[in-house]
Image 1 (cartoon, rainbow over the protein chains, first blue to last red):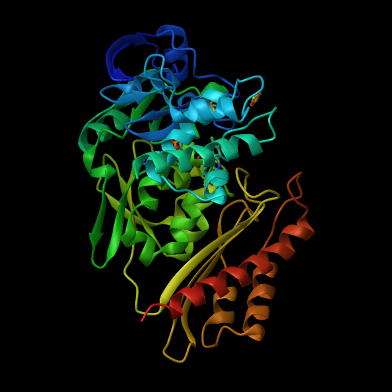
Image 2 (cartoon, each protein chain N blue to C red):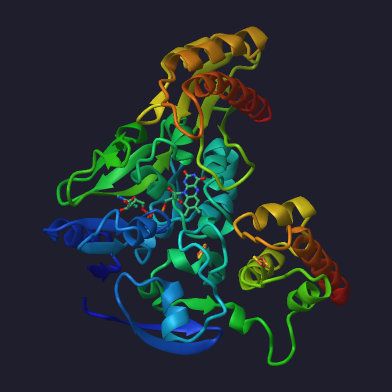
Length: 160
Length: 287
Ligand SMILES: Cc1cc2nc3c(=O)[nH]c(=O)nc-3n(C[C@H](O)[C@H](O)[C@H](O)COP(=O)(O)OP(=O)(O)OC[C@H]3O[C@@H](n4cnc5c(N)ncnc54)[C@H](O)[C@@H]3O)c2cc1C
Ligand code: FES
Ligand code: FES
């Protein structure tokens, strides 16, 4: 197979890579660009551990091809903190102990961030539905949901 | 395998028609990429249609809406016009997968993947939606019910693909609804799905209806007997019982781990009834 040359933007930086035509974007991020924050839980769109945004839209990177990234704006978990400063969601996940093994955490954070950008004041039900495509084997979800609700409160308070 | 992302419909047609091996359209990829990574199919060419501007559009046409083949579920759900005119179609699409899957999955991909349990298809069939098929020969308009011919099989000829789906205009006091049964609340494949589209007159008598069932036959069923149970009647308990009986009678499901024949047959009637009730309530709210 001849490789495809792709120019894209990842977390605000211009990035170029070569990939096989059938290689997923998740594989490209992890194995070619060294961005191993996005995890492969299932490789079939069921677990959300590979969540990223493409042009602002939350997607599973295991369900996109590297080639499809041409000209797109990609955002991954690696772009969430600003240097040493954690994103409020990251701080709240720590505060609420919303993780144990942590393999699902990058996906939950990326997905929750996309939710709060679209809906800064979600109800608990809205949060649970939005995150239904993110699976966690450890926490039992409640702490994750509470961390997201608490972040929304705090971000609202910070704005007003 | 080659990956191509043409920017015009003509270029896509040329690529698809010119491929001697197995060619596949790539829309959201939420079925195709899984089929490829599971080695269920090994295409020689995939044609990504998301770079064709026309296919990314939802446009108003003759009082209805034309939905391009590359429009994602998330984009469709954000379109106020389609949500108001065809809420049942939108709710069918929005049941597909998670938020992440919605960011990619398309209505047309759901149709062309030809799963008997595809969630948007019963609502499209109830809506009498029309697919525009493009290919090396003249383009043709085909009722959506004629696209899937069996599990994973379509009536599309080599080199053909669906450019868009047209949802027609509707009279006042018309609406639709789609419901599915799954054992959990999210992220599962329909055990049974039911779509109902109807029109009421000023006395709440049903003047027009289409009823469809998913996951209870090799392809989505249009159940004319069930529509007949609604037309000419008010949507009351007696009418709904007749509708349920007709829907259950039309179901020819299989036994599998998701549900037995008996269960699916019964649930076909129950869901048809509930979907008709929702569609009627929605129709009453429209002028
Ligand atoms: C985690 C997960 C959950 C899911 N849940 C559901 C669910 O609840 N309900 C449900 O119905 N589905 C579900 N699906 C299946 C899938 O998401 C849908 O069928 C989706 O609508 C497919 O659309 P797509 O754009 O991703 O299609 P693609 O994967 O791009 O294409 C699907 C098939 O259709 C063909 N195709 C696509 N576009 C065209 C076109 N314009 N012309 C001709 N052929 C075309 C492709 O070649 C391919 O064979 C789920 C999938 C995943 C991964
Ligand atoms: S790895 Fe992508 S959804 Fe599980
Ligand atoms: S913390 Fe282990 S899977 Fe979620």
